[in-house]
Length: 164
Image (cartoon, rainbow, N blue to C red; front, side, top):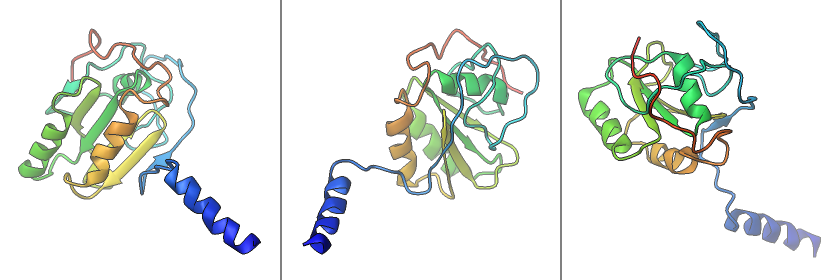
């Protein structure tokens, strides 16, 4: 009887919403660590940590952003979609369509990415090869204003709107 219970238990756990996103990594960061100046991060692009006291205004940008402002937006519940500056225009258009209408999303090119596209939230990140990867939308749906954001609902406007 013990042999049959384990598969049923695993099936029950899966059916009850064990909704991991394949390839996504998670990290632990304390919130509220405001610092000025240029900071060093563990991930590229960053997925949490110390950040500027001012947040980046959410929206679509054609130039790279400062990590320190964007990370503060992640703390507020934003998701940051980044892509290699040489990504094909058609793929950038797909990313813009994905971000359209979302009020807690940043989109920008990012120099030095080890994959064509990366999507980050506070304490989570996924890297993919194509802009049409269905996991990008799943990540957005899970993490934009999601439970892992320490200051979920804090503004994503009225902050910094510049680029690098």
